[in-house]
Structures are given as structure tokens and as C-alpha cells.
Amino acid sequence: MKLKLTLLALLICAISFSQNFREVQLPKPENISPLFVGPLFKSTIHYGVRPPNYNGKVIVFNHGYIDLNQGQFLFDNSFYQNTYDAGYQAVFVATTRGEGIWVNGKLLAEAIDIVTEKFNVPQVYLVGHSNGGKASEAALIRYQKQDKVTKAFALGTPFWGTYLADISQLPLLRWAWSLTGLNEGARTSTTYYCRDVVRPYLDNDPNNIPEKFVILGASGYYKGSTIAAPGFLLTGGVLLPVQGANDGVAPYNSTLRPGGEYVFRKNDPRAIFDHLDVGLGQFSWKYVKSYIENPSKKSNQIVQKNQNRHVIESDHYIVYSENEYDKLQLDKNAKFGVVDILHQQPTAQFQVLDQKKQPLSGIKSINNGEHRTTISFSENNLELKSNSKFIAFVKQDSRIKMKLETISKNSFPILKVNLLSDTEEMYTSHNINVTGTITKTAEIDGTPVENEPQVITFTNKDNSFYFDTQELQDGVYSLFANSESNGDFKRSIISGFVVGDIKNGFDTKENIAADLKSTVKLYPNAVKNNAMLSIAVDPSKEIHTIHIYNISGKELKQFTIRKNQQGNYNISDQLTTLQRGIYLLKIDGSNTIKFLKE
Image: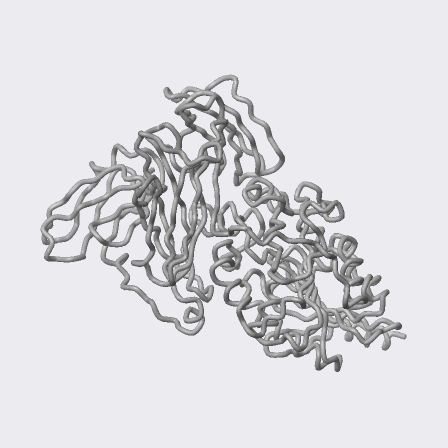
């Protein structure tokens, strides 16, 4: 008996190594411990026990960003038990924590080869939760496994990206993204990367067979039954309304892969659950099973084709905790404003200070759970203070919107901004300025890069504002765009765009620009009382022009310095008047330097 138990234990824990995976045999579903965590770091293939009524079909599950299969065994997920009871061989493939669509897609393609050979089957069914669905399409199309997959089920998969990922790529807001428990793989899940790279690259590939995809998109971020990380879905609940009905991570419209079979309609009463629930068997198995057992099944869900994914609108502006120059301001005709705040500490305290820096009485603060607070205000030029880092989205009753449109022009898009009021274009005699900061965050193939922000200015032409990207390097850029009109109103948009030829972006690693950061230095980088500037660019220049901007790209100060032999300049006096916050410094035509004024 002892020998049998020993052999059983060895079977359960047996590990065989492939090139990128370890392979592990699971016990029967009823014997999985509630404390089973799965792998923490290593890519792994978990093989379920073959059921006694095995029907010869294999289902391969792939997770989203936040786990390496823990979600398949925690939260009372019933997928393993469901498949076992119905006679299917279950396999759970753990790829990586957030390496993105291309890395996880390549790993999943390798796993498909391993699984089909092991079980001697020509094809498998794929069930991918969240970004597991994106890995599925990369495996089928880019890595050419379409002949080895019968159907690919995508549960809450953001095929068109998510605004949460857009937020993650703004360097200032990386901490807000960390509330979701996600990480750097978000760079291939931004709305603009999916729109400008993933969709055209995969949808136009001759290997694309869209009818193999069955889509389950949920709409109820506010109605989860799982033990979710609080910030994970709260962040989505606050930020995703700009994209409509959503599950807290994936907007419903983003789950609509072109040409796929859509099980649920928008706000379908059968799918009012959150992003974690859609990945659990008790919510999704019956729909997956029905499509496996009825290959010709159709839901007849009608999807509107006229969605303009090149346009994003904002009815808010952004206040950032590190910048004392960011104030709560009412639009000229607004009577009140509402501030929706995401804060780093689960519980945070807030004060609103008047122009004399005195606490303002009568301010209503509502705690909406961990990491989120709402405050209303009706006065102007107020300062928001907290004991926690935060980002605040300020909305008002004036109904002014900022609209950003990305106009395709060969490989160099043009960014166009308009201001709208009550759905009509807003013309005003006041001077409207549209500025922004852009940061190159990745190459076209998703390879991350580290760059400082650059300041950009939009040119006014016939009451529209334009920025042409033709002078930029090829790559993926995050964008923080801002519009302002002499204190009458201001609006902000976080988005991004892609520059360069998509196909060539996967075939070359060129476009390495000269590094000007090493030629211009400011020290210390956190400026208190003293600031020294070191310049080693264009020695023929006798006078250098220095520009200081706030983080939204608005120019605050300009001054000149005359060249000296040492190339070092004390600019302390020029920075003493700046309030605490993050600023950008630019010298002549060089790259931008980011610094902190304490």
C-alpha cells in the first residue's frame, strides 16, 4: 500500500521538461486542494486526469495576465470538474505573467504541438481567458497552428485593447496600473496597439480563419462573485465607462473579434458578471460545451460595424497628486464638479484647500471602497491634498468634451483634436491651446523601450488642432493630450498611437536614434534649492534656449544661457518659483529631460 501511495505521489508531482515548459500531472478534480497555487514563475503544462468516459476530445485552457493557472483551481472554478464529468481531457497551459500577445502566443503554439502529440489527436479546443484569448489568435495565425485547433473560445478577451492598458503606459501612472495586479505585458493590450498593429496584422493574414473564434464578452463589472483584488475591477469601473459596457477590464465592444461568433449581446442579462467570473466554469462552461457539441451552432447576434475606433472623447481633466500646480477648477459656466479619485493606499484621507491654503469646510467625500474616493466641489482654484499618491478625474456639468481622432496617413498618423459642446463643435473667441507629452514605450513588435517624454504642440487650423507624426521614429507611443482655454475650461485625454510600417516592424530591429539624453543632464534630478545643468550639444551655439513645461506639455518658462567652456550652468534661480511637482526641461532641439521640483 505504501508503495502504491509513493508511486501515486510521484505521478502527481512528475515533471518532464520540454524546451520552454515543465509538465505536471494533476490529480482528479475532486482531489485538487483549495490551496493549490500552481507555478509561480515557470511556464507549465498541467495535465488533467483522463476521465473514464473519455470522448477523445482535448480542451486546452490558457489564462490571462494575472496568473499562471491559479485561477483554474481557486475561486471554486468548475472548469476542470466540468470537463472531466463530460468526458473531455483537460489541459491547463501556463505561459507567462504578462509578457504580451506575441510571447504568450508563441509559447501556446509550442504547447499545442506537445499536447496533440501526447494525446495523439489532430486538433484541440482552446479556451482562453482574457489575454489567453489573444495568445490563442497569435498561436493560430502568426505561429500557424490553425490546423491543430477546432475552435478557440475567448472569455472576456480585449481583442481591441483596453483603456486600462492605455493608462499603464503613461509613465506617471504606472502605480495606478499596479493596482490591477497586472504588469508590463499591457503594452500589447493598449487600444491603440491593438487597433494599429494587432488587428491589421492578424486580420489580414492569409492564415486567419475568424469563424474558428467563439466570443463570450461580459458586461457586469459591478456584479462579481469572486474574491477579486479590489483595485483590479475598481480601476476598470472608474476608467472604462469611456468605452461603454464592460466587465471591469475588457469593454464589451473590445471583445468583438472581427468575423467571430458572438455568444452574448451587449448588456446581455446572461452575461452580467465581471472579468474574473467570465473565466470560471460555473458561468461559461455550458456555452462552451454547447458549441463543442453543436459545431454548426450560431447565436445570430448582430454586431454593428460602424464603430470608429480611431476616435476617443473625454469629458474630464486630470489632477495628479505630485503636482501642486494641478488645481481643481470649474469651467466658466459650470456650477459644480465631481472628482473621481484612484489612490495608491487602500484607504486615504483627503483635504481640499482654498487659495489661501486653508482647509475648505463643507466638502463631501464619499469612500467607494478601497482605492477609490469621490469628492464634489463648487468653488474655484482649489488644491487637493492627500496622504496617498493619487490620480483624480475631474468632471463638470458644463458638457464640454475633448475629441481626439487618429487619422491614418501611410505609416505616419495625424492626430486631430476638436472641442465639443452639447455634441456641436465649440468655437470661441478665447485662445484655445492644445498641447501634450508623448513617450515612446515600445517597438512595433512590442519590445519595450525606455524613453523620456517629449513635448508636442498641436497646430490650430480652422478650429481643429493637428499634430503630424512624420518626424518621429518608428514605434509605439503613449500620449497625454490636454486642451485649455484661458482658465475657461480644460480637458485631458490619455491615449497613444503607432508610427511606422507594421509588417516591417516585425522583421527589423532598426530605428535606433541617437541618444541625446547623455548630452544634457540636470543634477540633482530632484531639485530642491540648487540645480546644475550640463550641456554638451552643438558646441557652435553661443546661446542656448531653455524651455520648462508642466507634465501636460504647457510651457511655463523660457530663458537663455550663454555658452561657457565648462558646459555647466547654475539654473537654481530660474527654478525657485516653480511649485512642487514634475516638470519637463528642453534645450534647443534636444530630447526632453524630466525632473522633480521638491
